[in-house]
Length: 428
View 1 (tube, helix red, strand yellow):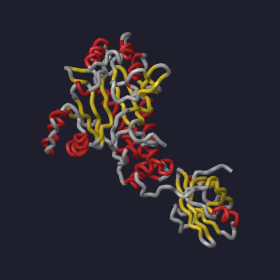
View 2: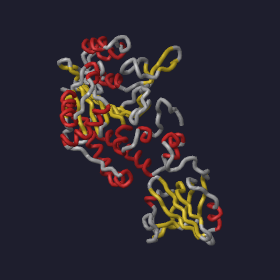
View 3: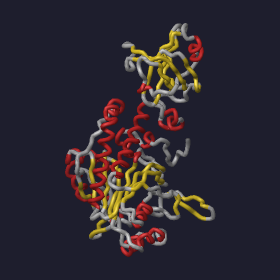
View 4: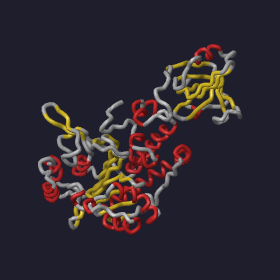
């Protein structure tokens, strides 16, 4: 007999269900079990006198054991879980669970030590289902617009953005590095004439950051596309992609998210508001009395990021905010400049920076001069080769899938990654 997901069981028919035991009430003459799979929960009602073999099989069984059970599913108005129950005729214990090493109030480090158990909650299941729908929607949106999916190497010969914050490792007789981003190879694809590409994959940052939003390995969703006229084209594509994806997640999981997380998935309106860094700081001072230290005026501070959440809602009635016109010393060397101002942006959502995007410099001589200016000439020599033989104007951005999930759930980075990696965690 084929397995049936709990959400698909048919009342009045014999069904075969497999899953984890969530709860067991073993009485003298009756036993009530709750089995769950990834689609839902089902009550099993067992009359011990009629089913002595099943009664023996469940004796001493602990929650989180895995079972296979077959039997008719019938209606019962007294059962809270959908008004149905199964009356098992056959039950097989596939795996016996020991007493769990953590409870519902365990601290985050204990939960991460036993992550495979921690992940069994309904909230965590929903979180990764949302994440799946989000990335699926990104792909759909881009594939409909003639993008090609590529997979770039994560072992590289030079630091992908700068000489700092990279993981170095032995590579036969030399050195290699884990890629900080697919940036260089995305641009190589532009030089190759691919015109529109995207990638979803791991990103590595050797940052000793102990915050709720940083990790040493995370999942990035990156794209690059050619024949743009300005970085406004890049912002437009991103706002449209995010709106499309959030609509999909809202339609499929909005009610469940509201029930389990107490959060509304808000689908943004277009276009997203835009403001320069200088004007943003002036507005934050005017509205909230916030003054940024002189030494940090050229970048968006963490505190200013947080304030953008309230500011964007009050000023524009929006959850998102594009911040533009960063000084060149705070932007990567490959950002195109106009009047010496990098042609790029940060996108803030929910008080968190989720994207740095830009029009790239595609002219070899200008790009080489900007790399030399940052002292990176030799380190990026291989990258500069991509631009010697013709390259169209292009731009792109990357978003952190984990950070998007953080904002959708109000969880921390440790809780939204399948397995968190940080300065103090390399297992399980």
